[in-house]
Length: 372
Image (tube, rainbow, N blue to C red; front, side, top):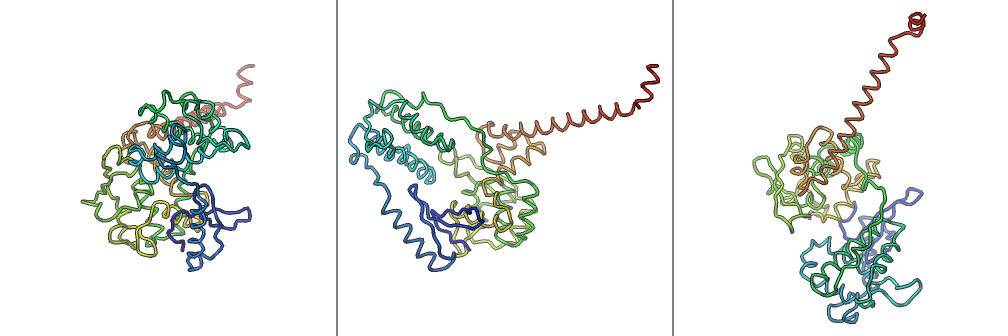
């Protein structure tokens, strides 16, 4: 069993061998001990300590980088209420990306870092440089632009800089479908491997039937259910709007919950009897996908599959918004528009087929005789 420990990452090499790493501060250390053993935990603690010792020093708001520099601005932003009010996962992700930008050299092979750039000299060229240095990964490049731009917008509001240079830099354009969306056959394959009564099948059912994110699924418990309806506020939006999502517990889901091992306060528990963290659950569920022969699948893609299935069965934008807790119709329209295109293409194909059948009803010999 995989320990529910933070900062673990799993991948597979070209020979199909699973590798486990401790990843933090942009670096990683491989763990070679067998999972679930004391030696594994010892190696994990040693790797975590080594990464923390080698971590870059965090700049304090009034120390570290000189006042009026880009690094000083970042440290001030990290101490601001606009940043500290963000969810913990968002803070960690945003801070890691911004601090990586601070460590970028002003020029290739230069010892001068961007953290020491005076704010009056900070320009769109610097922001474009940060974006372009991750051009090999357009998603990461655009994340740099997004988070640095947010920080600079905050600085404009605080009158720390006159204008936001990131506004003059466009994000990179690239084609991606994001996380792999499960197909119905993949769901059946997972269910065939993980029978009702297992924790893996319970996790799949909670995400599939409730359309919830992994950060919400790990908090669900019997206290959230009343009169056959589960009620919760999505973690991703609770700091903006306390809009509760209310979803009925379908009979199939109720049957799976009743047959599964559940905790007192949360349905899903680790092997040590504690609630999962969001990251820990994501890694654990990925292992269950691998066991079912589905290495391309993850918890993220299951939510996409649910939205696609509902849209193809005729769900409207408002119904998807209510089910998945979306605040605007923009994301819902992505799925309904895709379903509409698929439906229209099928209708067009049927029309083409009927036209060919009508033509085939007229034998060539008959048409020749009519012409004669």
